[in-house]
Amino acid sequence: MRRSWDRAQGDDTPREPLPSIEDQGSGKLVAPPASAVLDSAHLGNIEGAFGRINLDDDGDRSRWKRRLLTLAAIVGPGLIVMVGDNDAGGVSTYAQAGQNLHTSLLWTLLLLIPVLVVNQEMVVRLGAVTGVGHARLINERFGRAWGWFSVGDLFLLNFLTIVTEFIGISLAASYFGLSRYIVVPTAAIALVVIMASGSFRRWERAMFVFIGISLLQIPMFVLSHPHFPTIFNNFVVPAIFGGANSSSVLLIIAIVGTTVAPWQLFFQQSNIVDKRITPRFISYERVDTVLGSIVVVIGAAAIMITANYAASGTKFFGKFTNAGDVAHLLARHSALLGDIFAVVLFDASIIGAAAVTLATSYAFGDVFGLRHSLHRGWREAKPFYVSYTIMVALAGGIVLIPHAPLGLITTAVQALAGILLPSASVFLLLLCNDPEVLGPWVNARWLNALATLIIGVLLDLSGTLMTSTLFPNINVISIAEDLGIGLVVAGGIVYGIVLLVSRRRHASVQPVQQRVLSRSEKMTWRMPPLNLLRPVRWSPGLRIGMLSLRAYLVLSVILLIVKAVQLSSG
Image (tube, rainbow, N blue to C red; front, top):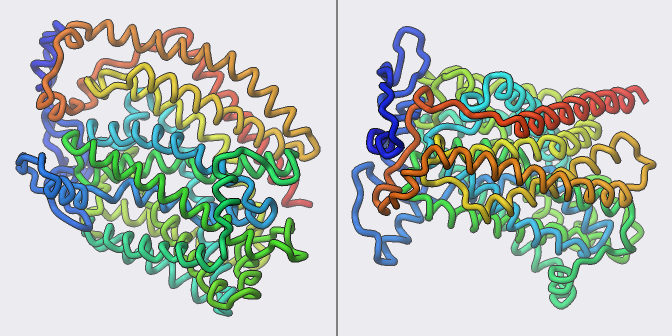
């Protein structure tokens, strides 16, 4: 397929042969001939929690029964990444919204569905078509400097996020009167055992067990005596209880930041690669992703409604402290309800810790060219599992340190995620407009326009969050409005750059576009080995835009560190 693609472009440049997929001397991985896949374990049968699809299975899937069986085998990466996003930080943020502002912010959750679907759908295509993780693509297509800049930030943010997951585990343990010095190490050991089983299917089945436990949100919602007319109205009518002010605007930003996180991009793409999903099954993985986005919004709404029930009409309304205290407030109404909320918090923390840590280990393997697959056992992929174990152990250990600044860590994670998300989205958009990477699967123009709008909104929220974190007394509403106006102009410029780059790149493959690929050709097209791809052409406008983004990120992170030091020193 690569040969016919090149000839269609009029490219007869000879390509150097590639080495075998594994260099036995170094233990590192290299791309096999005619494939970009770095780890041989990423090739083979799809082994999902609820079914298996053989590599040579090209049978007809026109009947609904066959389609449903295929979906059952494919489902997983989308649901896990979305449910994992309702982690300890998510439970805390949604509970704060419910306890402080009733259910008036439910509408924000509905608006986040298209944001989640658009971002993660692009990741789905990248994973299935390229067979390479997100970190590796950034590193190879934009250079090591950009790769390390992006992945280095990810490692820091993910580690701090894992710490917040263990904070959630500690709060849940405290509710039940259990010592965190017992529960936290036990949870850490369980996370390592589940991940290091040497079987992707066993790992995914374990994740679905925890997803099943998260369904306790349904009886939790029912026991909260929801008032359905009010809930429906809050979903469809944007409003803020008490009117817009700095606190409510920041809470909205926090909801966006905790629901759309950078680690999601890295996790789902690598997990799709590890599950061996190919372009033939992109439509099924899209369904998986949409289902996940709906599930995450339903769960977030249930938490918000339950927290409102806990505090509404009491002296604790508007005085949120942490998710553990919400469980105690619920216990005043019903011991069962308090117990369920605490279990949901614990379960969310476990899923979040598993997904975020695995996303980091995937990126670690991508960057260093090491074996990084759940299909491999401990002996076959020792660095992959060691990196996972070290992160879990260190994160759990920090939570056990007496008087550790856990509240400061939680705040820093929220701010840092808000800073890094637009950068991750920009790289995602550029990769999805690269015909060398996605070939016939590149973004449509309407999708570029929608993605650019989303990035503009994320930049507005990121700038507002950063400014308000550094300068607490500033008028957040005014800042958000000013940034919004500026980003409307900047967004038009960015979209123009993306459109120009896209046209230039498509110009080089115009003969291919004139020849419409058949469905079978498109479904079997995959990215060639990375060292065979033409380098990215940096236009002056693109270079200026990316350097400006880098300067913003560096300055923001420095200012955040300064602010954190000031807070820690009192």
